[in-house]
Length: 137
Image 1 (tube, rainbow, N blue to C red):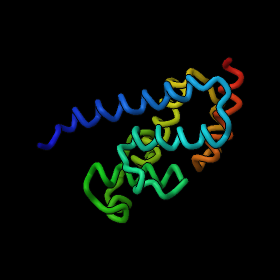
Image 2: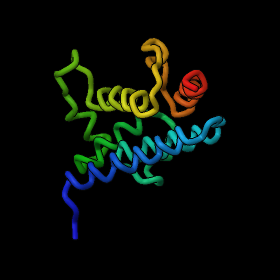
Image 3: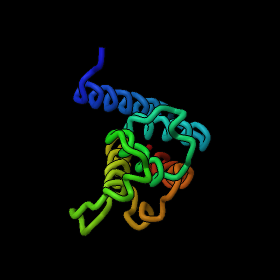
């Protein structure tokens, strides 16, 4: 039996919250732990399976998530993504920004906007979040 979109979104949100809780439960996360858990968090937030997340590029993963949700190819997404909100930002860019906001909210950290703008990969995000988690405690 297929579950509704609303149920899938709720399950995804709850799964992401569990991953965030696991990160917060680790008083001294190391780089490897944090990277693994940030990847899992992204997978849950973007509703992607592990095998759909071969890339480390957050923009590519955002596009994969949107394409999967719309049931279209990433190539077709490039053609149809003509977003006019947020000064012409693409759906993938908006999704990425919302992801960064969620990371900060759920982990209870603040990241400098200029630093966030430089994040391209999950490894970049790990490097940015790791000291912020340490400073929080």
